Image (cartoon, rainbow, N blue to C red; front, side):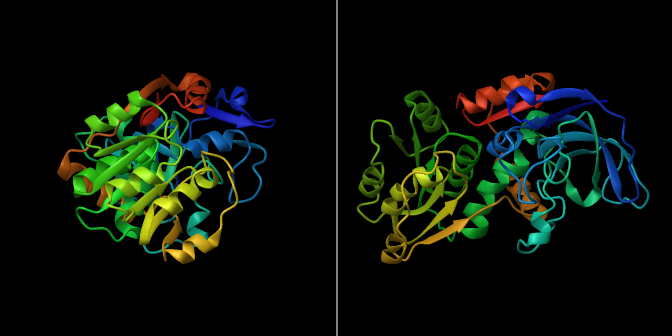
Length: 338
């Protein structure tokens, strides 16, 4: 089989297609023929040697946590799947239910566990889930990280009601899933972007208010304006240090800011007095459990939500896909197809 590998000195140019032995499933394992994987910002950091809860990235890795495939064979004792089932890989192979723990967090695909970027892969039967039949393989591949992160932030951690105001930063995978889920739940949505064309696409998906943060860098002001001065109930914070100051100005007293990513860079120092002053909640979010994933899939099926797949590359062109992500060319998700 063929697999994607990357090693030191790291970087997009080091992502290579290599030949590897076909795996076979052991007890409790499932052999999956991968059909598609999707890119996350984490993957871009990982192939640059800049990511790794389990310590500094070393040696070589098989990237990608998010994939869709077909079960080819099952090992002894497997009861959850049989050959022919279509499945998604779980980001955390060992987080089935309950709250997060360090032990669960150390079971992430891509690092430290070899990822889904290979034609054939074995996984624990506990680290896979069946998926809605109406979705394409490409769409399924977008669900394990970006969709589940947005779902958990909104419905597991956020305390929201229909009519509440949700702010979504940018038009990458997590934010677009957040827009789709928030719209389905009856929340008022405001989305930011530096591109008017992307904002118009978001409007077509149900966004209630649009802000171009390049034209309006102080985007907390329009958030306050559309909420009558009250502020947003919930902010999906993907920028990190580069945007957290605006989020603190935009959130209402007692509101919730979900820290999803750090794509805007370091930015200025964060003053915790602002957090005290409005009694807001600031919470880090890293994906979720298999139970959360399956609850999300039931909602996706009920509402007929279709993930936004913006660009598709053959898996042999992974370098081009990463360059497209690095350039911020995408709206929604980038997918590699096997």
